Image (cartoon, rainbow, N blue to C red; front, side):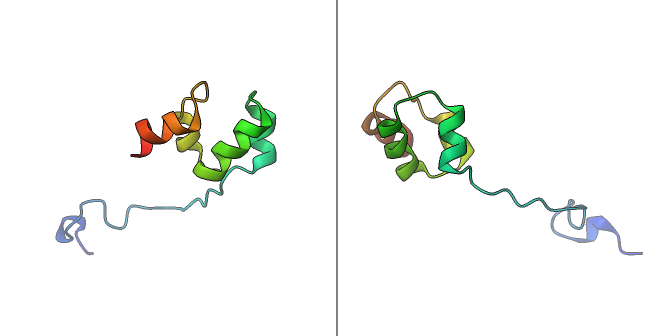
Length: 72
């Protein structure tokens, strides 16, 4: 039997399953986040449906502020 430590990464071969996560749809996000639809359209067009981006964004501030603080 092959020793796990023979590989460069000690976690080699440990994955037992894989889960494909899809982006959150605009309509689902609209149902969950209570902000103006125009503002949500702007945020969604920039950040897409990637949950960590929305968690990190401050929806109480402008999109421009979030871009400067979080992206640039």
